[in-house]
Length: 305
Ligand code: APR
Image 1: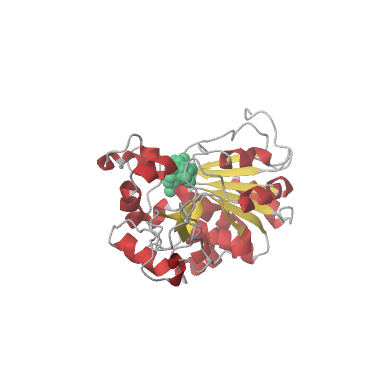
Image 2: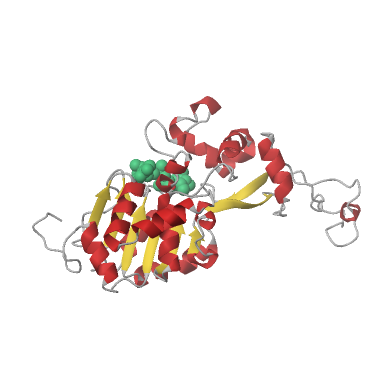
């Protein structure tokens, strides 16, 4: 779209026009799509930024290629690089939500958040106070973990302790029945008495979506929310990974789409009502909050975290 083409819905392609659109009550179902860029200000590196991104700094872990750290088949052969990374990424008190997270929580508080789809695994959306029923963690999270062989859930505290020690946790459930010996879970076989029976011993992995795994079912069931949106905000993502990267193009024609990102990504700029707020997302969000008259409320909510 060149600048000569007038927007269809907004008065102009600017954050002030987006603020007027929201203040006029024309945005009641806002869908927000986020990536690692909204957590870099919290101290969590993103993946693909040239120098600071995780993928630029995994070389020390002698991986075939950076993404292997999140590849299921590689994990089976060597889980140590993932667990070295997990130690840095594991959610804990040391990371707090950013202004961008808090702005999304403000939208929810004002009844304007139709759905947040995040690719992040840091759980900062929950900590910012966004209601769980308005969050789709498209790439899973560290909230739970299980054995990749028998799928038995693994204890959260044991997981935290293993990660803190940089150790690879192993499944302690009873070994799966071997063919022919007739023993199986629930038949009182020696593995069930919690006694010294053989242990499964499978690798434990958090419920993070690895390359090669399908996204959670609630991602797919929530996709219609994007086509119901009357405003779409995209923040801090390179839109490199499908199917998440397909979401922005599911916005209905004429629905304004705002990109808060250091760089232009995806098909942003091809629609008449695309607004590109290029630069640091926290600054862009602060500019929009100011135009909405929410700046004090935003800063107070962020300080109160
Ligand atoms: N403000 C605005 N944009 C930022 C900021 C910031 N403070 N910091 C980084 N960015 C931008 C980067 O320029 C980049 O375009 O955020 C984007 C981050 O892109 P990625 O590092 O690729 O992260 P993301 O898009 O979330 O990656 C998607 O890839 O490896 C998989 O599963 C992993 O969920 C992840 C997925």
